[in-house]
Image (cartoon, rainbow, N blue to C red):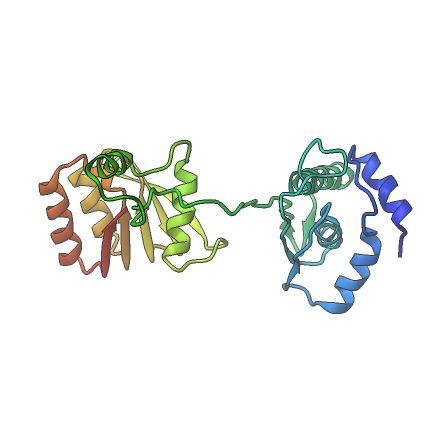
Length: 250
């Protein structure tokens, strides 16, 4: 079933230093015994990512499972990076090694996918009004200044998309398709159940195009209307006419 020493040697071959890693072979055995194909394996103390490697190894020989790893961003032994970063690095290297060993791996006639998504818990991408702040004129003016641009500095459209996705009740694994409508990028969620447009310059053409697609819900950036209240009012009426259940801006 493997030993800690053997697991340490395997990590060293990948260029990763980590004390007392769990043996991947042992976890492969436990995963086979304790789960069925198609299920999700959850490790709430991911460490160096052994559980992820074990699932990838099983998938490489024709089994089909998914994994979710959770790890606090605590420092690794040598302090050079966090354990969470080390975990992600390991999964990338294991996937690369599996591809190198077997070329384009296929399972049940389908090309294997060794990609993964990584998320971290953080503040909202959108500035929120702090009701606990002092209400004197100077403090209010300062807080209003912060909300001139209510999206936090350094946040990408990808960040905004996934926060809106979660707040709209969808999971992180919900299918997302980026489509072009009236020369603007629109994210179609769950086959068009929700459409999200994060363009900073909305037009009547893209609004009509989204409405014609008849999604259940539409979300746009308020900044996309650039203060054009008439365009926003027209958007409300167009979506309502086309039967869109909900339209809101963030």
